[in-house]
Image 1 (spheres, one colour):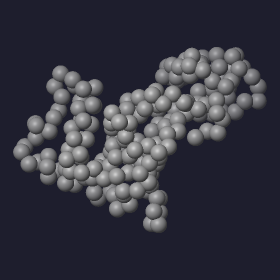
Image 2 (cartoon, rainbow, N blue to C red):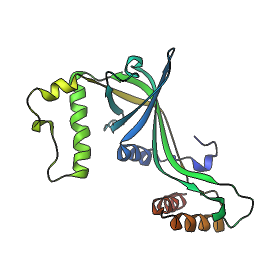
Image 3 (spheres, one colour):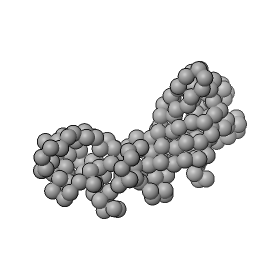
Amino acid sequence: MHPNKVFAWEDREAVLRFVAERGFAHIFTASEAGLFVVHAPVLLTEAGRVQFHISRRNRVADHLPGRVLISILGREAYQSANWYESEDQVPTWHYEAVEIEGEARPLSPEELVDFLDHLSDRFEREVQPENPWTRGKMTPGKFEAMTRAIVGFEVDPIELRAMRKFNQHKKAEDLAATIEGQAGAGREDIVAAISEVTRSG
């Protein structure tokens, strides 16, 4: 995380909502064999834990359970120094991110199925609520066979770090110029993010 405290995102409820809405993460771990990362969909439980699954054949699978670092990236964009009013500025990058540390414990077969049902339901409701996919649409036995090829985990966060870096530390004219530059680049999502952090700050 960026060391400047002005970028710290300290609204835990909003941070967890971000995790739930993004739903996809880089999950890192380490062992004597080296460093490992897996890219996986994540689900936030009502208890605030993070669940995910991976293929049993994924090289990270042999190094879990264990301590993991989950990284979730949101909106991000390049910032040209040409867009500032002030002189002697340098380019930078806008972004929002969350890091979660904790111990990944294996899900039981029953917990894994429950997780998969909730995961698909969460995203099916978003993309096709009128006709959501369910495992009931599969040939009997096929879902169970495919489930044996994956392993699920749950992480109870020990550390939760979050930040939103959108030039909110700049003086008013440079912030206005940032908004104009990002709008000109078609990045209305970044304009919206700037409005959010300056309004909440």
